[in-house]
Length: 251
Image (cartoon, rainbow, N blue to C red):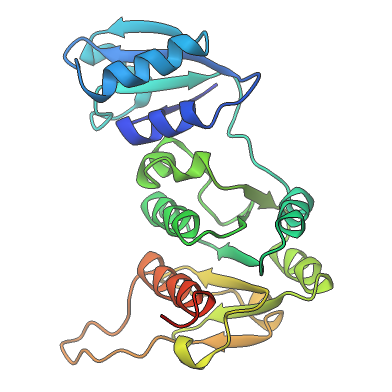
């Protein structure tokens, strides 16, 4: 069983349901009333999801946090990951230039959620994460993504390097976001079929993954106060929206 919590994540998860779903129970704190909770309750009942009013203590026990915003949604199974072939097929059917996000060794759930949120906001076709050395999509990640994890396909792959090779078979260029050196994003053509690889803050992109990339992108820093880099989520967002700018005619 998995559980997600927070107003936006729960609302987006319910909105994304079409047809049969494994959503099982909506839990609402006795202290939470009115406003968005009423909307969420209506959505749940329309989908025949059981609605239970519980104490704040019961909700905290279910979610494992006191930052649940008074609402949670239980599902029967685990997170519904997509797979790379489904994501590629979905992209090809859309007809627009590809924009994929590959996340290498992002172990901080907050960063993973923020990057998923940015990828969804930028209109990316999908997010790929490795099964090992990476945070999984949990309730904390979904909350950090503001519900975007329920709206963008996310694949969990066994080998990120092989996933890169698969994307290259589709003539998709792969760009590594590399703090150590690379071309500036606005001097790199991101308007075509592209996959952007973002590594962890501490170790960056692993060597074998980096060697599979076609080019490197680096964000220049102007600070002289000791802050010499952006975190992974911030850096990934900068590059994603530079791609959006270029695809929008450079405006």
